[in-house]
Length: 432
Image 1 (cartoon, rainbow, N blue to C red):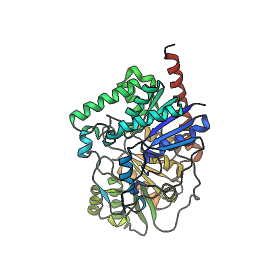
Image 2 (cartoon, helix red, strand yellow):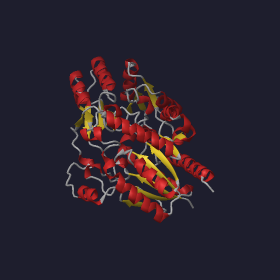
Image 3 (tube, rainbow, N blue to C red):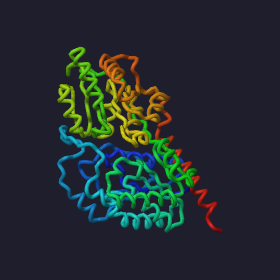
Image 4 (cartoon, helix red, strand yellow):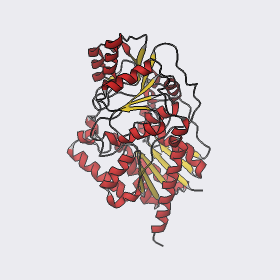
């Protein structure tokens, strides 16, 4: 029975969407024959703690020792009243894209400070568990330094999973020149030394294959996924039609500006008011978008809500008249597929995607999940909102059969293929 060490700094009960992918792998790889040990952070700050119950098979061991003891003690001692489910609804955020001063100068982000501790702990675990392979998943990108150290120490296969682009990320350009140079070198070494690299979109796979031509056959696309869960019946609730965006709105490259302008147009045309429609956002809302809503006179249609536990969030999405999905509008935008896409496919409510992203548009079309438009298609956006507000039954979401390709069990099966082929290659090329 092969044994896998999964190094994932983000893992439940952390609320970050990045924790979901490694959790789903840990949950489903055992059914494909793997024993899994997870190395993750020791303590989750209260404002990032998600109370949603998570199930793991008996053959999964979770070791919370990625961070050094001093950091774990500091996090555990935090008296943070801004808990995950009580974040003020008025919380706003400036446009994303400018890293903190610390991140500008620390390659792979601040977590690199304890990467040495994580590597030592991972090597000890890998030896004691007699693992056959190691899989590292980023963010933080320093997790791949941990994977490299384990693979070198034990001469085992290593799969590096990039949930987001590394140097092909819009925030990378905002870092200092020395940091950019170091990260390019670290990225190059990761692609050179890893047995395989997985990314979450076909567009990013193709971009990395073009950059690292000599390693192209070892770079794979394994998209994110959803885990099937019980959901309430799909039915329109009483009250105003709910237009729902699940997550943060950053403004700039990822904004609800086109939706706000369409709502303003509907208000001009028909006197639309808060008894007929509400735009709910669960997460922080950009100051830029909030200012635009005030300028357009539609601020009264906004309901800014705190994030909620995952299971409650899925029930909330299920009852929406329309789910909103703005794509990243930037040079690197087509390389991303927003993780909330898969939650939207699971719940089956209709989706409105606004943005230029061919891969995203193809998924929406293939699953019948809703409507995908470019930002300049103002008339189509207005008409789609009108249909949702009026309860048009022809505006439907993804059918379960069509969305099945994005089931987490399919994702785990793809990872199983990558892991086993990497092992086979390792044994084939190992000196006898």
